[in-house]
Image (cartoon, rainbow, N blue to C red; front, side, top):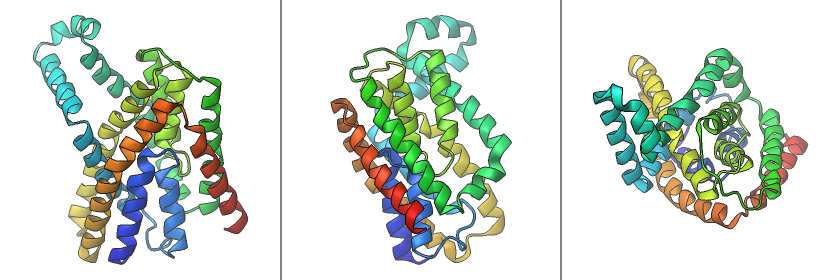
Length: 270
């Protein structure tokens, strides 16, 4: 992978991680069109550009993340107070909800890891899943003004949606935001939760992949990984603000038309 290919794919990742059109799907199609599908058979590059988007979340949501970490530390120091803290402290509850989403995501990854990694080699499957993402976004029109709050059950359901989004072409942000909206969660709360719940998933995946690379050595892949990560970070910051504005306005269905277009073209041409 050349430096400009890594830069281009990093920009695509950063924009499409938060804009609900499937970052993994766009990476698969982008790599295929650049002739990199065989060269990038594993998911190393995707893991690291996802880490770039995690850094963009930390930049935009630093205050919220600091509060979550502070409440988590307080809970660990006084475990006997956890039930009362859960009942009275909204930030602590949010942290618990984020942890809850990891359960279905982790189970799905353990059970279907090999199949999921194989899916990244199939542009046609990715194109078909983009059509599914488009349908998810279009269905938000049946819930025009959600005004409810998150709870534990809703968080579990959103976690299940995130596990399906490990399939390339299913947008993680789209699936999780839409699932929250279907359950009558306020739009801005749904988007914020979707972005924050990405943190432990990608940080964990990056640590695991980083340990593998430490044993194998980066070789000449180090510079493309770095460029892709930096590009994903910068474009991710802009994408977060775009999506927050779109979600507030209730206009997610416009991204559905884009998914239908790209998915349909992919099935036709690839």
